[in-house]
Image 1 (cartoon, rainbow, N blue to C red):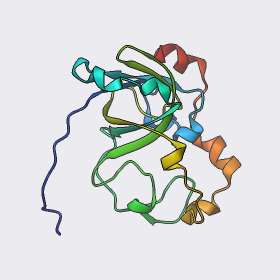
Image 2: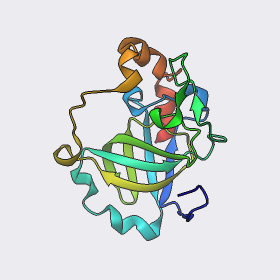
Image 3: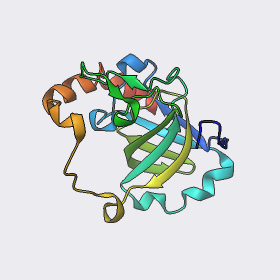
Image 4: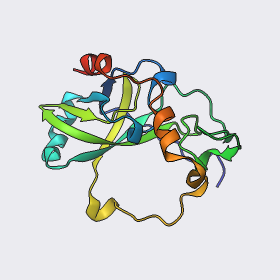
Length: 173
């Protein structure tokens, strides 16, 4: 199969709102975004699809990395000085700029989901929502690739990338 196969067109089901306006100051993963509040505003025609979502503590958000720039097939990931293939990273500059984050659902108000652990830029197009469930999704990993070499404390400190708190919280509400 070549890169000239079928193409797919997706339309957003909503938009992600957050206090993050600069990629360089946005946490790099939800694990480093605890306390980063935001919301998913779902378009009216998709609101009924939110039925029963409040029964889940966490959600997968699938979104477009609409400001990522052109793809890099080989790059140096965060906290690494070694080039890696893009598919062995979570870097945003991908052939198909699709992002995936697990966030905590704080509450639902109609067609708005209030979230914690938001690591997306304000205005990010939301493609889909899926519930996280330990019954299906929890996997005890045995290999984490080059990530095993990353110091967890240093990653946590650097991964927050300037996030300080209250200003983001106020904007997200």
